[in-house]
Image (cartoon, rainbow, N blue to C red; front, side, top):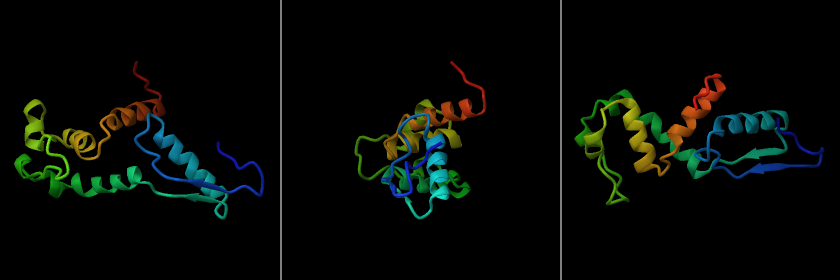
Length: 129
């Protein structure tokens, strides 16, 4: 549990809470709980690592998943990034595969999928070693 030291303290969290390791969900919950307990003294800012995950709602929608792999746009900012169709040469075309490609090749957070899988496993009491 997070607490403020005294009634004079204020707390500003500068964002980028996600993609740092297998504890992001728990840290998010702690920060939100602290904000709820101290709404006038706690400010939670959204960082680019947090904000860019909003893309996933559209990029993993049924409509987006219906696109053929050749029609999934390659990131325009990285000439070396494999297209989704190229990525599928070694992978099956599933929602999970698309998510892993997006995280690694368009969001620059290739460890996030495993971080989240590990954390969810721990939270569910099913730790795999």
